[in-house]
Image 1 (tube, rainbow, N blue to C red):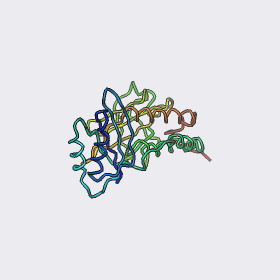
Image 2: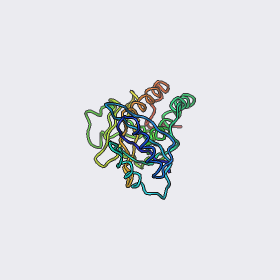
Image 3: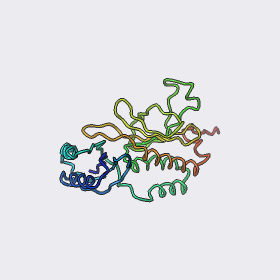
Image 4: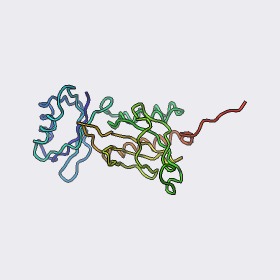
Length: 234
């Protein structure tokens, strides 16, 4: 299976090589490395690896934990192929080519781009700030194929893009389209024995950029998402 392994490590020569060797010795075949952050002498790297389905992940975690200064932030199953340069542009091109299904295209594609489990386009009531409880909950305009039914949504508001983690351990990234109360919600589910990492700020920024560009392309079509169907009386 394909796994995503997020590691925080000292940003000094040799440490990345130690992590890579440990992954290999544990049985992981590295197919991609993405540097998410380099700050204050520390780095945050995402490794996408092919992992033998029968092998125990505990062996991998123990090996990484033995490297001085290395911390494993998450190990979780990745959906789809590793991200490559140009995927975001290709996705936006698909949205522009078929704007009628533009929101659905974004929702279906984003989990694969961000190594997430599922996504939904949620419509938050425009008077969300004055409402509470069931009356203020968002409705779902479109859900990806792996989304639970009904989708389990955090407390979302259409103000700004951000990451959040709920008390039960599920991770979310949300980004508003900027009109009609529409928000794109992406989720990584908490599961055992694997534990996904929270969405990094670079991942939230990437989601926000996709959503902003999608909003420009789709324009007034966003107002139709989640709207009740129009019936014709004959």
